Amino acid sequence: MKLDEKRIVVTGGAGFIGSHIVDYLLVHNAIVTVIDDLSNGTETNLEGWKTHNNFLLQRKDIRNSATVYEVLKEAEIVFHEAAKVSVPFSTKHPCLTMDVNSQGTAILLNECRKRDVSKIVVASSSSVYGDTPVLPKIETMPTNPLSPYAASKLAGENLAIAFSKTYGMDITALRYFNVYGPRQRSGSYAGVISVFINQALDNRPLTIEGEGEQTRDFTFVKDVVKCNILAALEEKSKGEVYNVGGGSRITILELAKKIKEIVGSSSNLEFLPPRIGDVKDSLAGIDKARKHLGYEPEYDIDTGLELTIDWIRESNG
Image (cartoon, rainbow, N blue to C red; front, side):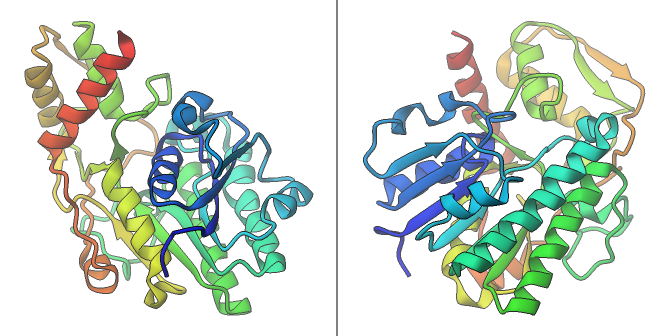
């Protein structure tokens, strides 16, 4: 199955990851509709496509079943990226997080069922594993969410696989590991890489939560896009869950020092109390995605950081 002239819906398509998926799809001649309420995303992320004949942005809420049903008309593939995506946000707004991430997913899946959508790829999260000491984290491990965000993503993922089993729908869930890259938000609920880069560019202290010894597997956004496309085109992925990671890990302290060095910043390091709901260590086992999908990350942390820093510099003027 190729993407040419395929009718594809991307929920959350004005957001960080969703907009990169939209880029790929339109470059490869798909017909793309984005549904996004713009609570997290921004039309700026889609600036280059606004007048494109194959592109339509619907500023709608995925929790409205009638709206979703209408948007899904003639859709063949759906990439579900719409979500409240922050652990700290979820600790302050647990009910809203659960409503969007689990109930919103249930509504989307049910309307996809009614529309007989051929393929659905659902974004999940590495946070579902919790703080297991065993590394790398593989898909057969027990899940143990430590935050409302993690619980909401696991609920959405479980719904996706349950819909696949119950109704025979072709649905795949992807557990993202700490995605970063151009267009990542820089506000109060931004990812750590975006925060560090902006602090370093301003020569402000790089704020590290805890002692900085926690490790993360950072995944460049274009690798995440590639895995989404592979999952959408691979029949063997039906009803499966896959990790999407870079396949290596770095401590937050090492990351801060690396960003300082690349930027050439005079920033100091400032240590804050540990974050509620945080996990200590994370590393993706990606053998299953390699075997089933042919996934292989292309961007190491240094390359990804340089591309991200260049983009943020340009965006900041």
